[in-house]
Length: 342
Image (cartoon, rainbow, N blue to C red):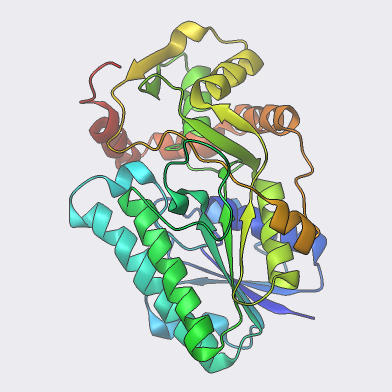
């Protein structure tokens, strides 16, 4: 039986990963460490709250004492904890941009120090395809240079490099995963899919950046979680693995698809000024994960996207509680209220 620590387990990908573990590895004991920032929601874990094989610890990965408490006796560590929204990383005040460096770099260091002390057998650093930067042609492979172009992706690259240094310097069994653009239930409605679905349900404008032709590889959150789990169980220490869906779509194509599922008009799409340094395209080559981890995505884009749109339609209490709050209203006004039309 494994005892595993999932940091950031109340967030979007982390909470879905916890639910996956309880289904697929019911004998494992799961400890979640989460600071419960704006995007960490206890409601995301309500279904496992009373599970005897589950423990929740509220705390910051930058707090060494909280980390030591949560990690005690754990054999595997999956680090999902991160500031993750590019738009917020571009807001110049320290309360936004500075938090990315603190959590995504220093927090990884704190986790690694404790993992080294406790001699864990695998440390999985969950990263992003954005560390490769803009990919105009071809597909990124794990040996490509890291060329991040936003404070968010730069902080994630910094966390990766700290993690890799512990493998080289301390022989720490570190594995890195780089996931593509992930969608699914419990995603905070600042990201494109939940924002646009919730706005469309209320017949509000969908603020699409620029021409909407930015291309992303769309990955269902459960398939992403299965890839991360495979990396934790079968990944080779010191290696990175791309985890992508193989579904390259433009933001406009995704927007039009979700409107079709909801039966809403395309007239709701309202182009707005693009964000600074917006990467035009990401694309991953995932052959290494498929051949070495025996992993591949199981859900088609159309199936997973339809199910996700329907989840937000059927769980309006979840996102309305968020969007009605002062923090969300202030963020939305700051990010979109002053943008020029695209």
